[in-house]
Length: 300
Length: 300
Image 1 (cartoon, each protein chain N blue to C red):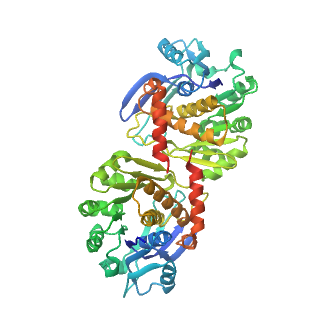
Image 2 (cartoon, chains in turn purple, yellow):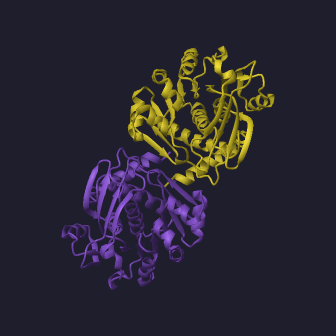
Image 3 (cartoon, rainbow over the protein chains, first blue to last red):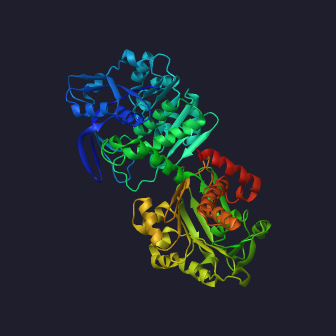
């Protein structure tokens, strides 16, 4: 069984959507990623929470067989994010970010995690992403995510990191900002030249694109009658992709394409309700059913 | 051989894009549609031009084996449209519309066209679309397009027409405006309730959706390195769809899906250059090559 190590945030989110508001609910990139990936492969988490972090969330994550030996609890408050979505469910308006215990986060990879072959560096400071990577022993697949903030403020660190990354997850606006290209094909080509073997551009409700040096895979998103809360969709998508890749052990174009469809499937569960309410209740047959519905939706 | 009748505009366009400007070039919905569809099936045009319409355009259309016996030339100037695209290549800004001879267009279907089994009512006043349809004898498949202007100003006529339509081509904003729904699934369901058996929602660079009462097909668009001029893309798409359907003679879900992919393929040629410069030069092997590239791009 290939294990996946993820470093990222475990957070308490306050989210407002046109459908309602929820306060201090479980969130964070590492959380969404690991719950999603756990359906396919064993996951190990490197993150930090404050002493106020509810024990029921720990219990929930452990119930998914997620290894939390790398989740440090330190004195203080857990990282909190507050955001608001409008009807278009595009990028949320950030109302507040309280880094709290996350501000001094110095990720340390437990010895038992260091030989994990799959690594996902969720969206944190690229210097911390690199620091985690340096502690790993000969990983097979390294993937990372980022955000506009790091592109604007830690560009050189990010570019340095990308030299060691196999799969780069990025959204449309980040891809354009990072490369200065207006077209996605040109942007992808520029990003591939930075080092990653694969670039996955996430287009939200418009699907995603997988770029390699010699091929492109384009897939629409699921058609959802209602999006309830898109928080965590990108990390959930990455969790499905990495989870499937680790479980299949393959890196063929075929495996990558299937992995992206599994990622899309997982993301549909994430956006159906606040926090991980729907995603956390998903069972394997739900995933297989959605996968075959996706095939039905797209094949000709 | 199933013949396709199209009624719509044959126009002279003046188009500005970030790449340049061209003046008084061949355009119009019936033009793009018929050149596109002609690669698959014989096409018959019902339209009107002025006495200033260049004979080289007539020669060009005839070279595509397009039947122009229903193209009236009357005294006056040809319909002219002037538009401008910005870098996002979304909806163009209309600089000027000179209806000219089109303002009194009273479409008359030549007797030899009336038994054609496939009918495409391109974007014109829904009362004129209906008038054309009334002249047809027992058509097998009737498709139509429309635009926001008719939704806003001739809504009742459009709704009446839709009762007799099999396939409704519509873009995202039109779908939302016509139905008052924000979600495309709900909008499609509402449109199907108006009468059409199939609704095709065009999403431009994000692909298209085919809705039937019991299934949905979602397909991304081709990834183009550069879009040069999107004018006519929707009509070219419809031309590929209807052309393939008429040539296959089938209306199965499988045939419809393939038809939509052929439509997408044809649209990629249309946007590669001003007017019909690229589309007009396309050969069957170009189409087959792009079709297989599309399969390669999307299958998993």
